[in-house]
Length: 210
Image 1: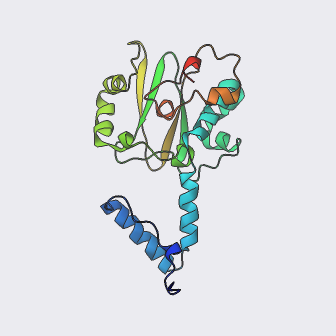
Image 2: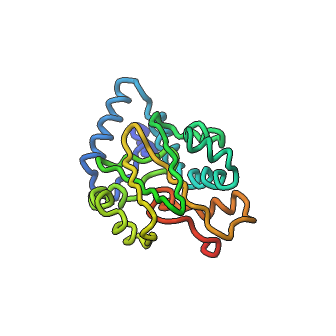
């Protein structure tokens, strides 16, 4: 006989791991906000689902447009958040976004040395390696060595610039457009843009690797 006093449909599934201290703090804050009526449980759920829907595909759309539209790229470099909004993409946070273009002479790579600041509203959740102390500490002092470990070996004449994200400023790398893509449309071009190329630890895929 079903006990109507307890509806299992509202019980979240058990986690597949013991919650970390950070996860415990997040759950405690969420519970407090709900308890005080500042947010409802449904609003929290919808916010989590909306963030989970964010993927690097949004950043890839932005880059593909910049590759085919020089005027858009100029606006993106001048005011990234405003240009991104032209594509109907809402980043969902107040921090400034700076777009940095990789060229034959300069290569940008992004890190957050303090924690894991990242344009989640544009690229989704950061990869685990981006949050690791190993990456955060080493890419600043030996960027070429770290990039080599990712399989990216740059010409010695290319200047490597490390961009340090903060709570107030996030970065989006515009990777160099691969050769042989002159006849490709935006959707095809976007398929060449990977999450790692948007961070700067890789280049965009060549057409043959789509």
